[in-house]
Length: 147
Ligand code: SF4
Ligand code: SF4
Image (cartoon, rainbow, N blue to C red; front, side, top):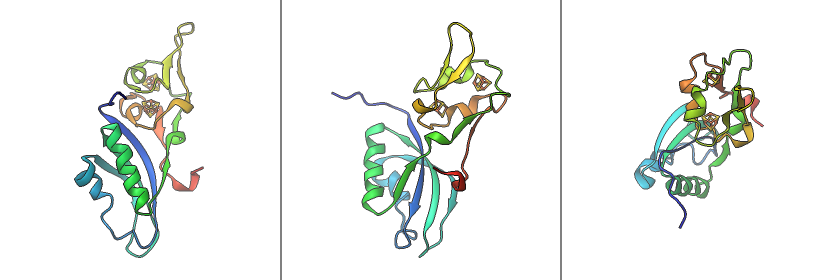
């Protein structure tokens, strides 16, 4: 049986077609799938294409059900994992982020004692951006830079 991961959290970038922009599909993530969501950035108006950067948290299976629901309703979903950046000059290699990182994208190199960041392992949960004392970890929410 697949292990249920509690406290699953992911940041996604959503694009709403005009006929979906005015519908409460994001609110339904809470009602139908017991997911919590935090709108980080939104540009939505009824009857126009809209965009939203959304932090979704809950149980991982519910997250996937919620994502399927959004897709069935015509919403385009792009993970923003590659939108997490580390300012190499600001990082003081305190290691605080490594204890919070759920995917081991941030780890301490046993030899050098320096903290390394593997962006390909990052799930864009955003935890490191909250705990970093010097704000070296940042999340780029500018859709103009999106890949
Ligand atoms: S918490 Fe910030 S300063 Fe500390 S190792 Fe992580 S990125 Fe560097
Ligand atoms: S690097 Fe930061 S955003 Fe990426 S998974 Fe680790 S804690 Fe989350």
